[in-house]
Amino acid sequence: MAKQKSSKVWYTIGAVFILIIVTGITLRFTGVIGGESEGKEVETATVGLKTITQIVSASGRINPETEVIISPDVSGEIIELRVKEGQNVKRGDLLVRIKPELYQAQIDQLNATLLSQRARYEQNKASFEQARFNFERQKQLFERKLISEVEYLQSETSFKSEQANLKAAEFQIQNAEAALRKAKEELQQTIIRAPMDGTISKLNVELGERVVGNMQMSGTEIMRIARLEQMEVEVKVNESDIVNVNLSDSVNIEVDAYPNRTFKGMVTEIANSANITGVSSTEQVTDYTVKIRITTLHNVNQSNNEQIAREDAGELSALEPTPTFKPGMSASVDIMTKTVENVISVPIQAVTVRDMNLVKSDSTKKESNVSENEIPKEDLKKIIFVVKDGKAYANEVSTGISDETHIHILNGLEVGQEIVTGSYRLVSRELNNKDKVTVKNNRTNAVAQK
Image (cartoon, rainbow, N blue to C red; front, top):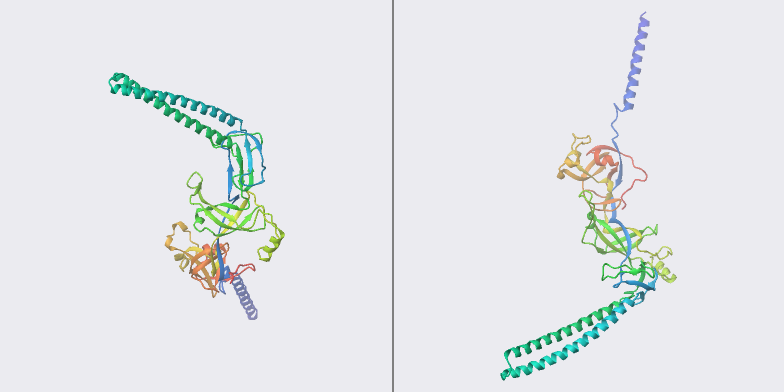
């Protein structure tokens, strides 16, 4: 009986021991007891040196740097059209002739009017001489008291009247001569010639059409002449970026018509007046027009010798056809505004703006529900988390310019330090000072280049 009781005791002890072991293994496996937490999983990169070029991107259209709109000064029917769209012309070449008969008829009419005014002038001149002779004679008789004062005054009035008529006749002749000169000028304006060397970039009329001259209203746009060998890109730059753009900044240009090719350019003009679009203040967009000259050779027939010379000079890696840009083509540009060489830089995603009071507070380890708009501006700082001995330490930094991937760190970091770059939620919201972290980088994780 005692032996049977002793066996039951041992069975009970064994069962309890096994239960304790199983419970311990379960709790350790679930992380309740034993071992320390591995920490938050983060991605990191190494601080290095890099050349950073700040870029302002924009889009727009290609247009000639010089383009002249041709509109007639006189109205009429086009009876001769010497050019076609795309044709090259020289300064002084005949472009258009407008029907001149009406203007020739006006000249004939004004010639007749001028002759009539000159004949009237001669008639008034004769009357004036007669009136002057009578006045002088009457004056002598009046001085001798041979005629009355009334007769003398009548002769004086008649003389002054004829003198005024003669002066008016002179003015009438001058008026007729001016009208005739104007008519002759209008006749000459029925022939339109090229004001400069260039290409007919746009032709809006056909032979036989009637056009309206600038004297009546805005006038009909007949055509445009442009210098296509010098094109530019006109883009709109946002007001927040325009302060970084300067004259002579280098530009990389991509044209939709030439995919996989990049052309060079230079900023030549920056507008002072803003373009404001949108009705309400919340919808308004403010930008400025920037003109960029395309410096890559274009719109010319280039010989093989020139191509080979350019290739030898290192301009071309392979023989590429000279591009032909047409007005209105779409293009996008990257304006290289500032460049700093061999500076401390990190991936842009490593920099975040946080409330340093919360980040460095040991009592605040949970994500704060306070809106950023409610945090005082003086408490918001730019920080980067540096990994050291398995922990993330918040470093306050100041930044400079940035490119598409990296940002210049002015102070707060040293070359070779390991910094947290992801995930975005961890860096921007969850990670705090001295939090334990576990580094798990992807093979493609970017590292700041030396």
